[in-house]
Length: 76
Image 1 (cartoon, rainbow, N blue to C red):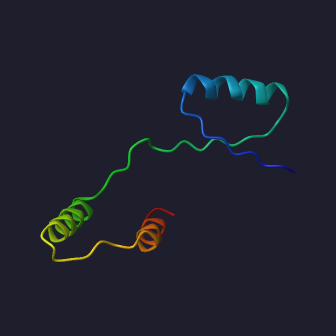
Image 2 (image 1 turned 90 degrees about the horizontal axis):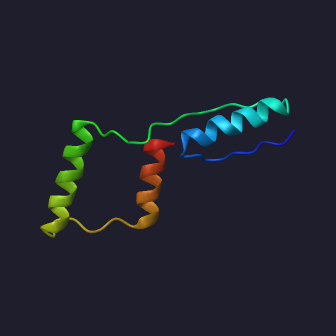
């Protein structure tokens, strides 16, 4: 078995692709994700506080690898 993953942003293309897959008898699964990320008030307050501290020189910049890990932990 082979799995193919594709990101399709146009809903019309999704409809056409579904028709093609159906005609070929190929099983598929569609996962629709929200196009916008929503942050809680607490997350926004934390971000704004971190930004303020950084701009005031109270905290250093975060290493990119540490930031990626935090984002992956939050959204993975």
